[in-house]
Image 1 (cartoon, rainbow, N blue to C red):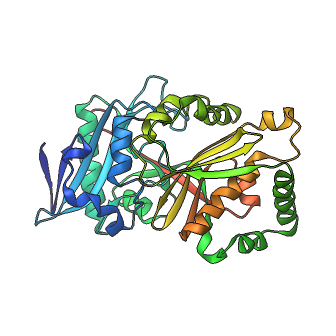
Image 2: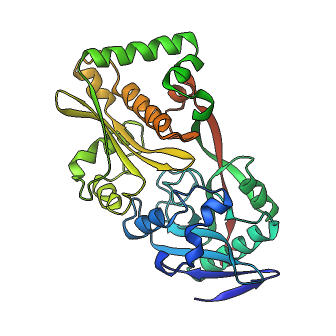
Length: 345
């Protein structure tokens, strides 16, 4: 563990979540960042059982003049599984956060622009020491305080992806959600759910049992293959990951005649529900002659769970944007902020 000076702030790097300062466990809530993505449970799970390959982990803590931790940035040596950064197939970069985080933020209790500068400086040093040419942040909401802070630190954002959200607090209920949709969309959603109900479709919710059968998670792989991102999910890795995320995780399963036809892993935190991983097989829907889409049923189950939990916001994930916009989700563009390391400059 070593430190570097950056004006008022110092940075400290640790290599495992077990060595983080105890106060980082509550830092996300104090900073207004995601308590899911920046909480110790998720960090520990991804450190031990990463879903995409991680070649090294570095946690950057920022300390103030009184040695109090005021910011935390988890960094990972990763590739580019979505081919979003124009990286070579075998190229690695130091990135924050992991690709399976769709809401990267500067988890800091201070808005001082020097905090971002201290973090970027330390990231460049770590990347250089590791022989990496590039480092930076992925999946940062365009125009957010984090995006503005990174711009202030000299980084330029490039368009990367889009995630989708629903303001559950404004809707209040499932009926409120439906009434917010345009007439044709509302009518179609009701028709899909009515047909599913007529076919005896059931929805169950449970906490991961700690030993999920990887074969039961293959439907996630099927979905990503159908949308052109084969390999983004691994059923074995998700099963292993879920052993460490039982506190906030819920599994939703849509079944028909005893067969799971759609499935989701969602995470609950005090102010959000994250539709983190989902799967259904649209080809199987068609081939089986089902008079409804299992995706409609799955998304309705996620929204209803968020409403029951009383959280203000649904994070609806990325991809399938046409469907999500049609059914009331707001698009949030995401950017990457990359820079060269000391080795690459």
